[in-house]
Amino acid sequence: MLLTPFVAAAILGGAWTLELLAGLAAILLAFVIREPLTVLARQKWVWRSPNPATASAKRALAWQLPVLLFIGAYLWASLPQRPLLALSVGGVALTLVAVWMTVRNRSRSIVLQVVSAFALTSSGLLAALATAGRLPMWAWQLWILMSLHSVVGTLNVHARLEQKRRGRSARGSYSTAIAVGLTGLLGGLAVVAWQSEFWAGAVPLGFSALVALVELARLRRPGALDEPFQRVGLRLLVLSLAHAALVVTFLSAAAGPT
Image 1 (cartoon, one colour):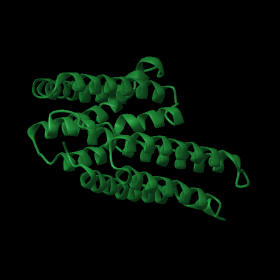
Image 2 (tube, rainbow, N blue to C red):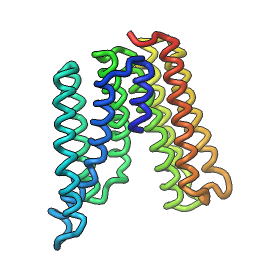
Image 3 (cartoon, rainbow, N blue to C red):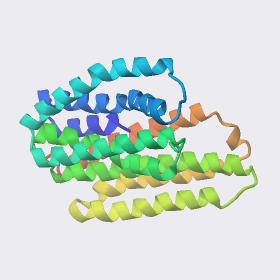
Image 4 (spheres, rainbow, N blue to C red):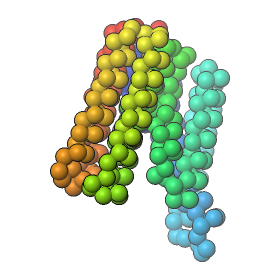
């Protein structure tokens, strides 16, 4: 969800620059830095006595934060500042919210995960900015298409978890989750089709809708809930990579980077 949009945007941008490598390092560090921040937050607000993990978290932050700031300063001097500022503020906000939700044991919140799907796939916007020097229309289209597919995957997992929690005979809850995902796909289709050839957005979105419907059908089969979650996750990962390939192929065929 984090690297796939970045790579897809880099392929569409077609320019492998030092700014692109710096952007990749920045998003990886911004993601990794959540762990030590979470440990320190737990030490301050949850744990009543010193935890050995706290010292390790402090050591990690001692090098991660300066390196991230150095890379950020380089990107600030090299790329358009307004879109970079917006992406940076969004990244900081998501990190703080994610840390707080994790400390409060709410990291499985469906709202947080849906918002995170849109936020994490914005790594593609940073890659587009690094390769094109601006945010062309294809970058926004890529972000919408890949974010909606990530939302579908999130809803599929939650639907499976909810049915397993409520019992094998439960009906309706997971159907509602999938319906929400399909509604989002239709909205995304309208937005994407507004600025590009219809098929360029329709094919990847149709693929996402098909994934949702197939997963819904799987939940109705006997023994579906006995399928290991590792296998489910691997299947959804492969489908996400296939979706990313469709997005790159059809956006490139429709307009290409402009």
